[in-house]
Amino acid sequence: MRYCFEFCAKVLNFAQPRYDLRYIARMFSIAHKRTFVAGAAFGIAIAEAILAAAWLWPAHRSKKDAAIYDYCLIQNQSNTVRCDALMRYLAQHELAVAEKNKQAKKMLASGRSKHDVIEWAQQNGLVGSEISDAAGISLKDLQSNNY
Image (tube, rainbow, N blue to C red; front, side):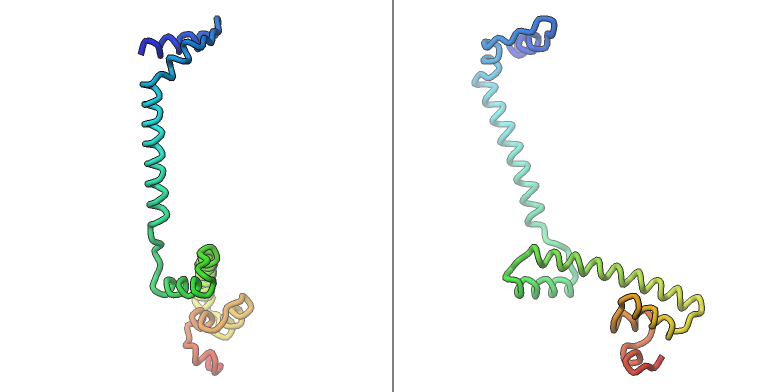
């Protein structure tokens, strides 16, 4: 401890800078090396534990999304990067459709006809069941033009 204090006092004394190798050598004595190695090993162990937990923690998906992900893995030779990108795309697409459905509900509430809402939905890229959900009609009615 005395050597550490002397070393710090000598090194931090900017008025008389003196970098004596004897003081530096004392700082890296056996006891200090052991402390450094123990701290480094502990830090590495903690980092590995955090990374292992992040790697092994399962993603929370619905059964439908899990089936899509599994099918994607089968089709893409277990390429998880591609399948993760697909799942991100699908999540963004679902959010966009939900936003458009909100807009369609507002249009219906403001007095617009279902026919106008269906045309608007088709112009905004909705298809099939997305359009029928937005207009509040069944898919069979949409396909047979009963709206």
